[in-house]
Image 1 (spheres, rainbow, N blue to C red):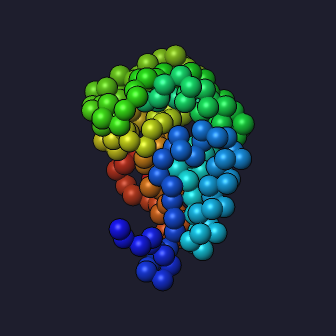
Image 2: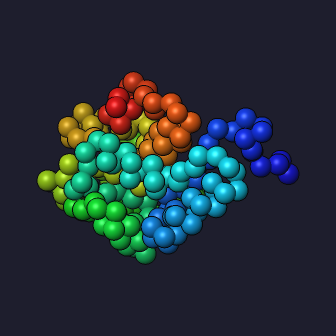
Length: 182
């Protein structure tokens, strides 16, 4: 087994990359995770959930259409967390997937259809959030932003953006969505 990455080994920040892992127990549970990461590593730390909230705020998202891979219980926890964090869930559409294999089998066409359903159900949303770090969203975000003229935040891309920003970098990367132009 490899030793944990430490500051002495060159790590600059720590990020927990799993959205539901950090939102499921609410803001208090996420705060406990952050404290453990910071205390254990002695480095700046974030969670995918914190990065998503920061990304939604950065693009001006307040009334959010949500598209997830999750089951109802996880969707309820996500809706509570977003509401407690000052966001309004305008609509939520879900795939109700239960295994990692099912998540990894999701195609770009599946993601486009899910996002379209979520946005159709929330015609006055100011942003789309695709939640589940295992969904491969990088390729569909520019297409969805062009199709719907709204910013699109996904767990995976927001998580990477937030982690990089913990190290002092801007997070800018052209061509992968509005978030990465800020």
